[in-house]
Image 1 (cartoon, rainbow, N blue to C red):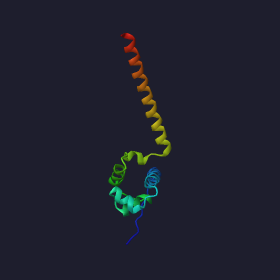
Image 2: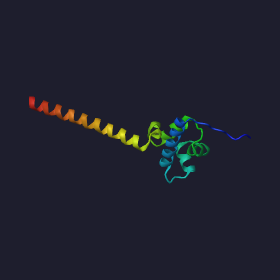
Image 3: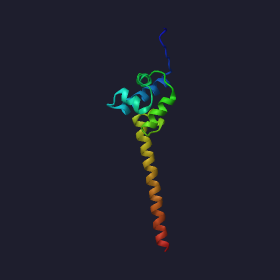
Image 4: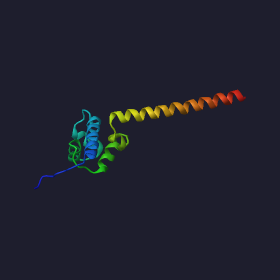
Length: 110
């Protein structure tokens, strides 16, 4: 049997390395077998994914779903996750400030 040859662009290799890092982080100390059972993804596929090999995108969706996260989160670097959290917190602060101002305005009218 001829060995599988996978040639990816630097763009694809970059995302694969991020996904690999995030998958390994998500699995933590859990064995690959236990991780496969929890996610409903085959052990062979888990092994391929962690080696940065070709896999079906539905496997990424299954893993994300089993951990209650977005598949998008598995494609983000730690720095990108921090930036997103900062934007979300800033938005929440602005909403809270608007609500506070509205309540204050309503109380001063009465």
